[in-house]
Image (cartoon, rainbow over all chains, first blue to last red):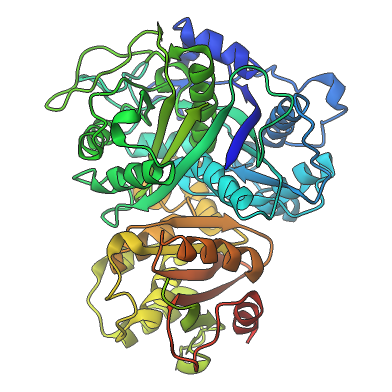
Amino acid sequence: MAYIAAHNIISPLGDTSAATFAAVLAGRSAVAEYPPVFAGGEPVWASKLSADWQPPTQLGPLSEYTRFEQLLIASIAEATAQTEVDLTSPRTVLVLATTKGNIGLLDDEPQLTDDLFEQLQLTHSSRVVAAYFGSPAAPMVVSNACISGVAALLVAQRLLASGQYDAAVVAGADTVSRFVLSGFQAFQALSAGPCRPFSEDRDGINLGEAAATMVLTATTPAAMVGPVVRLAGGAISNDANHISGPSRTGQELANAIGEALAGAALPADSVDFIAGHGTATPFNDAMEAKAFALAGVAGRPVSSVKGALGHTLGAAGLVESVLSVLALQHGQLLPTAGYSQPMQPQPLAVSAVAAAANSRVALKTASGFGGCNGALVFVRE
Amino acid sequence: MLSAPRILRTCSIADHAVRVNGQRVLAGPTGSFPEFAETAYRNLGIEYPKFHKMDNLAKLGFLAAEFLLTDTDLLAGTAPERRGIVAANATSSLDADLRYQAQVVQQRPSPALFVYTLPNIALGEICIRHGIKGENMLFVAANYEAAPQVSYLDSLLAAGTLTTALGGWLDFSTRGYRAFLYAVGASTDPALPAFSPDNVQQLFST
Protein backbone atom coordinates (compact mmCIF):
# COMPACT_ATOMS: atom_id res chain seq x y z
CA MET A 1 0.00 0.00 0.00
CA ALA A 2 1.15 3.53 -0.66
CA TYR A 3 -0.39 6.64 0.84
CA ILE A 4 0.06 10.11 -0.62
CA ALA A 5 1.65 12.13 2.17
CA ALA A 6 2.47 15.32 0.26
CA HIS A 7 2.98 16.71 -3.20
CA ASN A 8 4.15 19.65 -5.23
CA ILE A 9 3.79 20.98 -8.75
CA ILE A 10 5.97 23.72 -10.17
CA SER A 11 4.34 24.88 -13.37
CA PRO A 12 3.84 28.15 -15.22
CA LEU A 13 0.55 28.36 -13.31
CA GLY A 14 2.14 28.24 -9.86
CA ASP A 15 4.96 26.95 -7.65
CA THR A 16 2.75 24.74 -5.49
CA SER A 17 0.25 22.04 -6.32
CA ALA A 18 -2.50 24.08 -4.67
CA ALA A 19 -1.75 27.09 -6.89
CA THR A 20 -1.59 24.98 -10.06
CA PHE A 21 -4.76 23.09 -9.09
CA ALA A 22 -6.68 26.34 -8.47
CA ALA A 23 -5.54 27.78 -11.80
CA VAL A 24 -6.42 24.59 -13.68
CA LEU A 25 -9.88 24.50 -12.06
CA ALA A 26 -10.39 28.13 -13.04
CA GLY A 27 -9.80 27.14 -16.65
CA ARG A 28 -6.53 29.01 -17.02
CA SER A 29 -3.96 27.92 -19.59
CA ALA A 30 -0.23 28.64 -19.70
CA VAL A 31 -0.03 27.75 -23.39
CA ALA A 32 1.25 30.72 -25.39
CA GLU A 33 2.89 31.50 -28.70
CA TYR A 34 6.69 31.40 -28.96
CA PRO A 35 9.10 32.12 -31.82
CA PRO A 36 9.74 29.40 -34.40
CA VAL A 37 12.30 26.67 -33.66
CA PHE A 38 14.20 27.66 -36.80
CA ALA A 39 14.15 31.10 -38.39
CA GLY A 40 11.41 31.32 -41.00
CA GLY A 41 9.42 28.42 -39.52
CA GLU A 42 6.02 28.34 -37.90
CA PRO A 43 5.58 29.81 -34.42
CA VAL A 44 5.43 27.28 -31.61
CA TRP A 45 2.73 27.03 -28.94
CA ALA A 46 3.97 25.77 -25.61
CA SER A 47 3.57 26.08 -21.84
CA LYS A 48 6.84 27.48 -20.54
CA LEU A 49 8.00 28.62 -17.15
CA SER A 50 8.99 32.26 -17.00
CA ALA A 51 12.59 32.78 -18.06
CA ASP A 52 12.92 34.59 -14.72
CA TRP A 53 11.85 31.56 -12.71
CA GLN A 54 14.19 31.05 -9.78
CA PRO A 55 14.11 28.48 -6.99
CA PRO A 56 13.14 29.88 -3.57
CA THR A 57 16.07 31.67 -1.93
CA GLN A 58 15.70 29.70 1.31
CA LEU A 59 17.00 26.64 -0.55
CA GLY A 60 20.40 28.31 -0.62
CA PRO A 61 22.55 29.15 -3.62
CA LEU A 62 21.61 26.83 -6.47
CA SER A 63 23.44 28.55 -9.30
CA GLU A 64 25.77 25.57 -9.76
CA TYR A 65 22.74 23.44 -10.68
CA THR A 66 21.11 23.44 -14.08
CA ARG A 67 17.55 24.68 -14.49
CA PHE A 68 16.29 21.10 -14.74
CA GLU A 69 18.06 20.21 -11.50
CA GLN A 70 16.83 23.40 -9.79
CA LEU A 71 13.27 22.47 -10.72
CA LEU A 72 13.66 19.00 -9.23
CA ILE A 73 15.27 20.37 -6.06
CA ALA A 74 12.64 23.08 -5.58
CA SER A 75 9.78 20.65 -6.16
CA ILE A 76 11.16 17.98 -3.83
CA ALA A 77 11.99 20.57 -1.14
CA GLU A 78 8.50 22.06 -1.15
CA ALA A 79 6.82 18.64 -1.04
CA THR A 80 9.00 17.08 1.65
CA ALA A 81 8.77 20.19 3.86
CA GLN A 82 5.08 19.33 4.34
CA THR A 83 5.89 15.95 5.85
CA GLU A 84 8.11 14.24 8.41
CA VAL A 85 9.56 12.05 5.65
CA ASP A 86 13.34 12.14 6.00
CA LEU A 87 15.31 11.96 2.76
CA THR A 88 18.51 11.32 4.73
CA SER A 89 17.07 8.05 6.04
CA PRO A 90 18.13 4.80 4.36
CA ARG A 91 14.44 3.82 4.68
CA THR A 92 13.45 6.56 2.21
CA VAL A 93 13.99 6.03 -1.51
CA LEU A 94 14.22 8.79 -4.10
CA VAL A 95 12.75 7.92 -7.51
CA LEU A 96 13.22 10.38 -10.38
CA ALA A 97 11.40 10.51 -13.71
CA THR A 98 12.56 12.36 -16.78
CA THR A 99 12.79 11.87 -20.49
CA LYS A 100 15.58 14.28 -21.40
CA GLY A 101 17.07 15.75 -18.22
CA ASN A 102 19.66 18.40 -19.05
CA ILE A 103 19.28 18.08 -22.83
CA GLY A 104 18.42 21.79 -23.05
CA LEU A 105 22.10 22.53 -22.39
CA LEU A 106 22.78 21.42 -25.96
CA ASP A 107 20.69 24.33 -27.24
CA ASP A 108 23.36 26.80 -26.16
CA GLU A 109 26.56 24.76 -26.27
CA PRO A 110 28.06 24.20 -29.68
CA GLN A 111 30.99 22.17 -28.34
CA LEU A 112 30.64 18.87 -26.52
CA THR A 113 33.16 19.22 -23.71
CA ASP A 114 33.83 16.52 -21.13
CA ASP A 115 31.92 18.60 -18.58
CA LEU A 116 28.90 18.84 -20.85
CA PHE A 117 29.05 15.12 -21.63
CA GLU A 118 28.95 14.49 -17.88
CA GLN A 119 26.06 16.91 -17.30
CA LEU A 120 24.02 15.24 -20.03
CA GLN A 121 24.04 11.97 -18.09
CA LEU A 122 20.80 11.50 -16.17
CA THR A 123 22.93 9.88 -13.47
CA HIS A 124 24.74 13.19 -13.02
CA SER A 125 21.49 14.99 -12.26
CA SER A 126 20.22 12.21 -10.01
CA ARG A 127 23.51 12.21 -8.09
CA VAL A 128 23.59 15.97 -7.46
CA VAL A 129 19.91 16.12 -6.52
CA ALA A 130 20.33 13.21 -4.09
CA ALA A 131 23.44 14.83 -2.64
CA TYR A 132 21.62 18.14 -2.14
CA PHE A 133 19.10 16.38 0.11
CA GLY A 134 21.65 14.08 1.74
CA SER A 135 19.91 10.99 0.40
CA PRO A 136 22.24 8.08 1.24
CA ALA A 137 21.16 5.63 -1.45
CA ALA A 138 21.58 6.07 -5.19
CA PRO A 139 18.26 7.37 -6.49
CA MET A 140 16.36 5.29 -8.98
CA VAL A 141 15.86 6.97 -12.33
CA VAL A 142 13.02 5.94 -14.63
CA SER A 143 13.18 7.02 -18.27
CA ASN A 144 10.22 5.46 -20.04
CA ALA A 145 9.25 8.21 -22.47
CA CYS A 146 5.92 9.89 -21.76
CA ILE A 147 4.87 7.37 -19.11
CA SER A 148 7.99 8.05 -16.99
CA GLY A 149 6.08 9.85 -14.22
CA VAL A 150 3.36 7.20 -14.00
CA ALA A 151 6.00 4.46 -14.14
CA ALA A 152 8.08 6.07 -11.37
CA LEU A 153 5.05 6.20 -9.08
CA LEU A 154 4.36 2.53 -9.74
CA VAL A 155 8.00 1.63 -9.07
CA ALA A 156 7.79 3.52 -5.77
CA GLN A 157 4.57 1.81 -4.79
CA ARG A 158 6.16 -1.59 -5.44
CA LEU A 159 9.29 -0.68 -3.45
CA LEU A 160 7.08 0.27 -0.50
CA ALA A 161 4.96 -2.88 -0.88
CA SER A 162 8.11 -5.01 -0.82
CA GLY A 163 8.97 -3.63 2.60
CA GLN A 164 12.35 -2.31 1.48
CA TYR A 165 11.43 1.28 2.31
CA ASP A 166 9.03 3.20 4.54
CA ALA A 167 8.73 6.20 2.27
CA ALA A 168 9.35 7.17 -1.33
CA VAL A 169 9.90 10.62 -2.76
CA VAL A 170 8.97 10.51 -6.44
CA ALA A 171 9.85 13.53 -8.55
CA GLY A 172 9.82 14.27 -12.25
CA ALA A 173 10.77 17.14 -14.48
CA ASP A 174 11.43 18.07 -18.08
CA THR A 175 12.08 21.41 -19.73
CA VAL A 176 11.13 22.76 -23.14
CA SER A 177 14.20 22.81 -25.36
CA ARG A 178 14.93 23.40 -29.01
CA PHE A 179 16.07 19.77 -29.07
CA VAL A 180 12.66 18.41 -28.08
CA LEU A 181 10.55 21.03 -29.87
CA SER A 182 12.36 20.39 -33.15
CA GLY A 183 11.77 16.65 -32.82
CA PHE A 184 8.04 16.87 -32.25
CA GLN A 185 7.85 19.44 -35.02
CA ALA A 186 9.71 17.08 -37.36
CA PHE A 187 7.10 14.47 -36.46
CA GLN A 188 4.43 17.03 -37.41
CA ALA A 189 3.01 16.39 -33.96
CA LEU A 190 2.83 20.00 -32.73
CA SER A 191 -0.49 21.82 -32.77
CA ALA A 192 -0.70 25.01 -34.82
CA GLY A 193 -2.28 26.73 -31.80
CA PRO A 194 -3.51 25.87 -28.30
CA CYS A 195 -4.11 22.11 -28.31
CA ARG A 196 -7.61 20.58 -28.22
CA PRO A 197 -7.53 17.28 -26.29
CA PHE A 198 -10.19 14.64 -26.99
CA SER A 199 -11.77 16.97 -29.58
CA GLU A 200 -12.79 16.19 -33.14
CA ASP A 201 -10.60 19.00 -34.53
CA ARG A 202 -7.49 18.18 -32.46
CA ASP A 203 -4.30 18.66 -34.46
CA GLY A 204 -1.38 17.93 -32.18
CA ILE A 205 0.35 18.65 -28.90
CA ASN A 206 1.69 21.64 -27.02
CA LEU A 207 4.88 20.85 -25.15
CA GLY A 208 5.20 22.07 -21.60
CA GLU A 209 7.69 22.30 -18.78
CA ALA A 210 7.07 21.49 -15.15
CA ALA A 211 8.33 19.61 -12.16
CA ALA A 212 6.23 17.62 -9.74
CA THR A 213 6.78 15.52 -6.66
CA MET A 214 4.69 13.02 -4.76
CA VAL A 215 5.73 11.72 -1.35
CA LEU A 216 4.43 8.21 -0.70
CA THR A 217 4.43 6.42 2.64
CA ALA A 218 3.84 2.77 3.46
CA THR A 219 1.55 3.65 6.37
CA THR A 220 -1.07 6.36 6.82
CA PRO A 221 0.82 9.64 6.97
CA ALA A 222 0.63 11.55 10.24
CA ALA A 223 0.71 15.09 8.92
CA MET A 224 -1.82 14.55 6.12
CA VAL A 225 -4.16 17.46 5.51
CA GLY A 226 -7.58 16.52 4.18
CA PRO A 227 -8.94 13.11 3.19
CA VAL A 228 -6.40 10.29 2.87
CA VAL A 229 -5.72 9.13 -0.69
CA ARG A 230 -3.75 6.06 -1.57
CA LEU A 231 -2.17 4.71 -4.71
CA ALA A 232 -4.08 1.46 -4.80
CA GLY A 233 -2.91 -0.16 -8.01
CA GLY A 234 -0.99 0.26 -11.21
CA ALA A 235 0.30 -1.50 -14.29
CA ILE A 236 2.54 -1.02 -17.31
CA SER A 237 2.01 -2.59 -20.73
CA ASN A 238 3.49 -2.43 -24.20
CA ASP A 239 1.70 -2.33 -27.56
CA ALA A 240 4.41 -4.43 -29.26
CA ASN A 241 3.23 -2.76 -32.44
CA HIS A 242 5.13 0.41 -33.39
CA ILE A 243 7.79 2.58 -31.74
CA SER A 244 6.22 5.93 -32.61
CA GLY A 245 2.54 5.20 -33.23
CA PRO A 246 -0.01 3.94 -30.71
CA SER A 247 -1.79 0.62 -30.82
CA ARG A 248 -4.47 0.35 -33.50
CA THR A 249 -6.87 -1.28 -31.07
CA GLY A 250 -6.09 0.24 -27.66
CA GLN A 251 -6.12 -3.29 -26.24
CA GLU A 252 -2.76 -2.90 -24.49
CA LEU A 253 -3.68 0.31 -22.65
CA ALA A 254 -6.95 -1.43 -21.77
CA ASN A 255 -4.90 -4.33 -20.39
CA ALA A 256 -2.93 -1.94 -18.18
CA ILE A 257 -6.17 -0.35 -16.93
CA GLY A 258 -7.60 -3.79 -16.17
CA GLU A 259 -4.46 -4.88 -14.32
CA ALA A 260 -4.34 -1.64 -12.34
CA LEU A 261 -7.97 -2.02 -11.28
CA ALA A 262 -7.42 -5.69 -10.42
CA GLY A 263 -4.43 -4.68 -8.29
CA ALA A 264 -6.68 -2.25 -6.45
CA ALA A 265 -9.39 -4.95 -6.18
CA LEU A 266 -11.89 -2.61 -7.84
CA PRO A 267 -14.31 -3.21 -10.73
CA ALA A 268 -14.27 -0.99 -13.80
CA ASP A 269 -17.56 0.62 -12.84
CA SER A 270 -16.03 1.95 -9.64
CA VAL A 271 -13.95 4.50 -11.59
CA ASP A 272 -15.38 7.95 -10.87
CA PHE A 273 -13.17 9.89 -13.27
CA ILE A 274 -10.27 9.38 -15.65
CA ALA A 275 -7.31 11.73 -15.87
CA GLY A 276 -6.38 10.73 -19.39
CA HIS A 277 -3.16 11.24 -21.30
CA GLY A 278 -5.04 13.37 -23.86
CA THR A 279 -2.07 14.72 -25.82
CA ALA A 280 -4.45 16.01 -28.51
CA THR A 281 -2.73 14.15 -31.34
CA PRO A 282 -5.24 12.47 -33.64
CA PHE A 283 -3.86 8.96 -33.06
CA ASN A 284 -3.25 9.07 -29.31
CA ASP A 285 -6.65 10.37 -28.31
CA ALA A 286 -8.46 7.96 -30.64
CA MET A 287 -6.45 5.05 -29.20
CA GLU A 288 -7.36 6.12 -25.66
CA ALA A 289 -11.06 6.19 -26.55
CA LYS A 290 -10.81 2.63 -27.85
CA ALA A 291 -8.89 1.52 -24.77
CA PHE A 292 -11.41 3.09 -22.38
CA ALA A 293 -14.22 1.27 -24.19
CA LEU A 294 -12.38 -2.06 -24.04
CA ALA A 295 -11.62 -1.53 -20.34
CA GLY A 296 -15.26 -0.75 -19.56
CA VAL A 297 -14.66 2.83 -18.42
CA ALA A 298 -15.69 4.72 -21.57
CA GLY A 299 -18.72 6.33 -19.97
CA ARG A 300 -16.74 7.86 -17.11
CA PRO A 301 -15.88 11.58 -17.05
CA VAL A 302 -12.45 12.02 -18.64
CA SER A 303 -10.17 15.05 -18.63
CA SER A 304 -6.80 16.13 -19.99
CA VAL A 305 -4.73 19.00 -18.62
CA LYS A 306 -2.51 19.19 -21.70
CA GLY A 307 -4.43 22.26 -22.87
CA ALA A 308 -3.57 24.05 -19.62
CA LEU A 309 -0.01 22.89 -18.94
CA GLY A 310 1.10 21.32 -22.21
CA HIS A 311 2.68 17.89 -22.41
CA THR A 312 5.35 17.97 -19.74
CA LEU A 313 6.81 14.62 -20.82
CA GLY A 314 8.59 12.95 -17.87
CA ALA A 315 6.77 15.18 -15.38
CA ALA A 316 3.32 14.70 -16.92
CA GLY A 317 2.37 11.53 -15.07
CA LEU A 318 3.33 13.11 -11.76
CA VAL A 319 1.68 16.49 -12.47
CA GLU A 320 -1.54 14.78 -13.51
CA SER A 321 -1.49 12.32 -10.61
CA VAL A 322 -1.10 15.18 -8.13
CA LEU A 323 -4.01 17.03 -9.74
CA SER A 324 -6.08 13.82 -9.61
CA VAL A 325 -5.36 13.41 -5.90
CA LEU A 326 -6.40 17.01 -5.26
CA ALA A 327 -9.55 16.49 -7.33
CA LEU A 328 -10.44 13.48 -5.16
CA GLN A 329 -9.76 15.42 -1.96
CA HIS A 330 -11.66 18.52 -3.01
CA GLY A 331 -14.61 16.79 -4.66
CA GLN A 332 -13.93 18.22 -8.10
CA LEU A 333 -13.78 17.01 -11.68
CA LEU A 334 -10.75 18.38 -13.53
CA PRO A 335 -11.55 20.47 -16.60
CA THR A 336 -10.12 20.01 -20.11
CA ALA A 337 -8.80 23.34 -21.36
CA GLY A 338 -9.02 23.60 -25.13
CA TYR A 339 -11.81 21.04 -25.53
CA SER A 340 -14.04 21.90 -28.49
CA GLN A 341 -16.43 19.21 -29.70
CA PRO A 342 -16.76 15.43 -29.29
CA MET A 343 -14.36 13.34 -31.33
CA GLN A 344 -15.81 10.77 -33.70
CA PRO A 345 -16.47 7.93 -34.10
CA GLN A 346 -15.89 7.24 -30.42
CA PRO A 347 -16.83 10.32 -28.35
CA LEU A 348 -15.78 10.40 -24.72
CA ALA A 349 -17.62 11.88 -21.75
CA VAL A 350 -15.16 14.75 -21.61
CA SER A 351 -15.14 16.84 -18.47
CA ALA A 352 -14.82 20.19 -20.22
CA VAL A 353 -15.13 22.50 -17.23
CA ALA A 354 -14.53 21.99 -13.52
CA ALA A 355 -17.51 20.60 -11.64
CA ALA A 356 -18.27 19.38 -8.16
CA ALA A 357 -18.28 15.60 -7.84
CA ASN A 358 -18.11 13.26 -4.89
CA SER A 359 -15.43 11.01 -6.35
CA ARG A 360 -13.68 8.14 -4.63
CA VAL A 361 -11.72 6.40 -7.42
CA ALA A 362 -9.52 8.12 -9.99
CA LEU A 363 -7.86 6.43 -12.95
CA LYS A 364 -4.69 8.02 -14.37
CA THR A 365 -3.45 6.78 -17.73
CA ALA A 366 -0.47 7.52 -19.95
CA SER A 367 1.01 6.28 -23.19
CA GLY A 368 4.30 6.97 -24.90
CA PHE A 369 6.82 6.34 -27.64
CA GLY A 370 8.18 2.84 -27.60
CA GLY A 371 4.60 1.55 -27.31
CA CYS A 372 4.45 1.87 -23.53
CA ASN A 373 1.25 2.41 -21.56
CA GLY A 374 0.69 2.98 -17.87
CA ALA A 375 -2.32 3.12 -15.58
CA LEU A 376 -2.64 4.08 -11.91
CA VAL A 377 -5.63 3.89 -9.58
CA PHE A 378 -5.98 6.42 -6.75
CA VAL A 379 -8.56 5.85 -4.04
CA ARG A 380 -9.89 8.33 -1.47
CA GLU A 381 -10.56 6.58 1.82
CA MET B 1 4.33 -19.46 -9.31
CA LEU B 2 4.86 -23.23 -9.35
CA SER B 3 8.58 -23.20 -8.70
CA ALA B 4 11.26 -20.66 -7.94
CA PRO B 5 12.45 -18.55 -10.84
CA ARG B 6 15.70 -19.50 -12.50
CA ILE B 7 17.98 -17.84 -14.99
CA LEU B 8 16.98 -19.65 -18.16
CA ARG B 9 19.61 -18.29 -20.52
CA THR B 10 21.95 -15.32 -20.88
CA CYS B 11 23.42 -13.32 -23.73
CA SER B 12 26.26 -10.86 -23.50
CA ILE B 13 27.62 -8.60 -26.23
CA ALA B 14 30.89 -6.78 -25.63
CA ASP B 15 34.08 -6.08 -27.55
CA HIS B 16 32.50 -7.14 -30.83
CA ALA B 17 31.75 -10.64 -29.55
CA VAL B 18 28.51 -12.40 -28.67
CA ARG B 19 28.33 -14.91 -25.83
CA VAL B 20 25.33 -17.09 -25.08
CA ASN B 21 25.36 -18.82 -21.69
CA GLY B 22 29.01 -17.78 -21.47
CA GLN B 23 29.98 -19.53 -24.71
CA ARG B 24 31.28 -17.36 -27.51
CA VAL B 25 29.01 -17.80 -30.51
CA LEU B 26 30.28 -14.94 -32.63
CA ALA B 27 33.39 -12.85 -32.81
CA GLY B 28 32.77 -10.06 -35.25
CA PRO B 29 35.18 -8.03 -37.32
CA THR B 30 37.28 -5.33 -35.87
CA GLY B 31 35.95 -1.95 -36.89
CA SER B 32 32.95 0.14 -36.02
CA PHE B 33 29.96 -1.03 -34.01
CA PRO B 34 27.60 -0.69 -37.00
CA GLU B 35 29.90 -2.99 -39.00
CA PHE B 36 29.94 -5.53 -36.19
CA ALA B 37 26.16 -5.21 -35.78
CA GLU B 38 25.65 -5.90 -39.48
CA THR B 39 27.82 -9.01 -39.27
CA ALA B 40 25.94 -10.22 -36.21
CA TYR B 41 22.60 -9.57 -37.90
CA ARG B 42 23.62 -11.57 -40.97
CA ASN B 43 24.89 -14.35 -38.75
CA LEU B 44 21.38 -14.72 -37.35
CA GLY B 45 20.03 -15.46 -40.82
CA ILE B 46 16.83 -13.49 -40.28
CA GLU B 47 14.86 -11.09 -42.46
CA TYR B 48 13.98 -8.05 -40.38
CA PRO B 49 14.39 -4.89 -42.48
CA LYS B 50 13.50 -2.63 -39.55
CA PHE B 51 16.84 -3.54 -38.00
CA HIS B 52 18.62 -1.31 -40.47
CA LYS B 53 16.61 1.73 -39.37
CA MET B 54 17.48 1.32 -35.70
CA ASP B 55 20.00 3.43 -33.83
CA ASN B 56 23.03 1.82 -32.20
CA LEU B 57 21.39 1.24 -28.81
CA ALA B 58 18.33 -0.39 -30.35
CA LYS B 59 20.53 -2.54 -32.61
CA LEU B 60 22.53 -3.64 -29.60
CA GLY B 61 19.40 -4.55 -27.66
CA PHE B 62 17.77 -6.22 -30.64
CA LEU B 63 20.83 -8.39 -31.26
CA ALA B 64 21.16 -9.37 -27.60
CA ALA B 65 17.49 -10.37 -27.42
CA GLU B 66 17.74 -12.19 -30.74
CA PHE B 67 20.77 -14.26 -29.74
CA LEU B 68 19.14 -14.88 -26.35
CA LEU B 69 15.87 -16.15 -27.76
CA THR B 70 16.69 -17.52 -31.20
CA ASP B 71 15.91 -21.20 -31.63
CA THR B 72 14.45 -21.36 -28.13
CA ASP B 73 10.90 -21.65 -26.88
CA LEU B 74 11.56 -19.61 -23.76
CA LEU B 75 8.65 -17.23 -24.41
CA ALA B 76 6.43 -19.64 -26.33
CA GLY B 77 4.42 -20.84 -23.34
CA THR B 78 3.84 -17.38 -21.93
CA ALA B 79 0.97 -15.12 -23.02
CA PRO B 80 2.20 -11.78 -24.48
CA GLU B 81 0.67 -9.90 -21.51
CA ARG B 82 2.77 -11.98 -19.09
CA ARG B 83 6.04 -11.35 -20.92
CA GLY B 84 8.05 -8.39 -19.70
CA ILE B 85 11.40 -6.65 -19.97
CA VAL B 86 13.21 -4.63 -17.32
CA ALA B 87 16.57 -3.17 -18.23
CA ALA B 88 18.97 -0.49 -17.11
CA ASN B 89 21.72 1.57 -18.65
CA ALA B 90 24.07 4.39 -17.77
CA THR B 91 24.01 6.73 -20.72
CA SER B 92 20.31 6.70 -21.59
CA SER B 93 20.01 7.53 -25.30
CA LEU B 94 23.00 9.87 -25.39
CA ASP B 95 24.47 8.39 -28.56
CA ALA B 96 21.28 9.09 -30.51
CA ASP B 97 20.89 12.43 -28.71
CA LEU B 98 24.22 13.70 -29.98
CA ARG B 99 23.58 12.44 -33.52
CA TYR B 100 20.16 14.09 -33.48
CA GLN B 101 21.63 17.33 -32.11
CA ALA B 102 23.97 17.44 -35.10
CA GLN B 103 20.87 17.39 -37.32
CA VAL B 104 19.29 20.18 -35.28
CA VAL B 105 22.39 22.32 -35.71
CA GLN B 106 22.06 21.72 -39.46
CA GLN B 107 18.35 22.64 -39.11
CA ARG B 108 17.44 19.29 -40.64
CA PRO B 109 16.01 17.21 -37.81
CA SER B 110 14.77 13.78 -38.80
CA PRO B 111 11.81 12.20 -37.00
CA ALA B 112 13.27 8.77 -37.76
CA LEU B 113 16.27 9.60 -35.57
CA PHE B 114 14.42 11.72 -33.00
CA VAL B 115 12.33 8.76 -31.88
CA TYR B 116 15.52 7.01 -30.76
CA THR B 117 16.37 9.87 -28.39
CA LEU B 118 14.49 7.92 -25.72
CA PRO B 119 16.25 4.95 -24.11
CA ASN B 120 13.10 2.83 -23.78
CA ILE B 121 12.74 2.69 -27.57
CA ALA B 122 15.34 -0.10 -27.53
CA LEU B 123 12.98 -2.04 -25.27
CA GLY B 124 10.06 -1.17 -27.55
CA GLU B 125 11.88 -2.74 -30.50
CA ILE B 126 12.45 -5.92 -28.50
CA CYS B 127 8.79 -5.94 -27.43
CA ILE B 128 7.67 -5.69 -31.07
CA ARG B 129 9.99 -8.45 -32.21
CA HIS B 130 9.16 -10.88 -29.41
CA GLY B 131 5.54 -10.05 -28.67
CA ILE B 132 6.21 -8.68 -25.19
CA LYS B 133 3.08 -6.84 -24.02
CA GLY B 134 3.56 -6.73 -20.26
CA GLU B 135 5.78 -4.62 -18.03
CA ASN B 136 8.52 -2.73 -19.86
CA MET B 137 10.74 -0.51 -17.79
CA LEU B 138 14.01 1.30 -18.37
CA PHE B 139 16.07 2.46 -15.39
CA VAL B 140 19.12 4.66 -15.63
CA ALA B 141 21.95 3.91 -13.21
CA ALA B 142 25.70 4.57 -13.19
CA ASN B 143 26.58 0.89 -13.00
CA TYR B 144 24.83 -2.43 -13.34
CA GLU B 145 23.55 -3.47 -9.95
CA ALA B 146 21.76 -6.79 -10.06
CA ALA B 147 20.19 -6.55 -6.60
CA PRO B 148 17.48 -3.93 -7.23
CA GLN B 149 16.66 -5.40 -10.63
CA VAL B 150 16.37 -8.96 -9.33
CA SER B 151 14.26 -7.77 -6.42
CA TYR B 152 12.00 -5.80 -8.77
CA LEU B 153 11.54 -8.67 -11.23
CA ASP B 154 11.15 -11.18 -8.42
CA SER B 155 8.15 -9.29 -7.07
CA LEU B 156 6.55 -9.14 -10.53
CA LEU B 157 7.10 -12.88 -11.04
CA ALA B 158 5.84 -13.74 -7.56
CA ALA B 159 2.71 -11.62 -8.06
CA GLY B 160 2.00 -13.32 -11.38
CA THR B 161 2.23 -9.98 -13.19
CA LEU B 162 4.89 -11.61 -15.33
CA THR B 163 5.56 -15.27 -16.08
CA THR B 164 8.71 -15.00 -18.17
CA ALA B 165 10.81 -11.87 -18.32
CA LEU B 166 13.95 -10.47 -19.84
CA GLY B 167 16.25 -8.44 -17.67
CA GLY B 168 19.67 -6.90 -17.96
CA TRP B 169 21.77 -3.99 -19.09
CA LEU B 170 21.85 -2.22 -22.49
CA ASP B 171 24.29 0.64 -22.75
CA PHE B 172 25.74 2.38 -25.77
CA SER B 173 27.75 5.57 -26.02
CA THR B 174 30.67 6.88 -28.00
CA ARG B 175 32.79 5.68 -25.08
CA GLY B 176 31.82 2.03 -25.37
CA TYR B 177 28.96 -0.40 -25.22
CA ARG B 178 27.75 -3.45 -23.36
CA ALA B 179 24.68 -5.65 -23.59
CA PHE B 180 23.72 -8.27 -21.05
CA LEU B 181 20.30 -9.86 -21.19
CA TYR B 182 18.89 -12.85 -19.41
CA ALA B 183 15.60 -14.69 -19.52
CA VAL B 184 14.04 -15.56 -16.17
CA GLY B 185 11.08 -17.75 -15.36
CA ALA B 186 9.95 -20.76 -13.40
CA SER B 187 11.93 -23.91 -13.98
CA THR B 188 12.43 -27.16 -12.13
CA ASP B 189 15.79 -27.77 -13.84
CA PRO B 190 18.34 -27.79 -11.00
CA ALA B 191 21.13 -27.25 -13.51
CA LEU B 192 19.91 -23.70 -14.12
CA PRO B 193 21.16 -21.00 -11.74
CA ALA B 194 18.70 -19.63 -9.23
CA PHE B 195 17.50 -16.08 -9.88
CA SER B 196 19.54 -14.39 -7.20
CA PRO B 197 21.40 -11.04 -7.14
CA ASP B 198 24.73 -12.82 -6.70
CA ASN B 199 24.16 -15.15 -9.64
CA VAL B 200 22.98 -12.37 -11.94
CA GLN B 201 25.81 -10.03 -10.94
CA GLN B 202 28.34 -12.81 -11.51
CA LEU B 203 26.90 -13.66 -14.92
CA PHE B 204 27.07 -9.98 -15.84
CA SER B 205 30.72 -9.81 -14.85
CA THR B 206 31.90 -12.91 -16.67
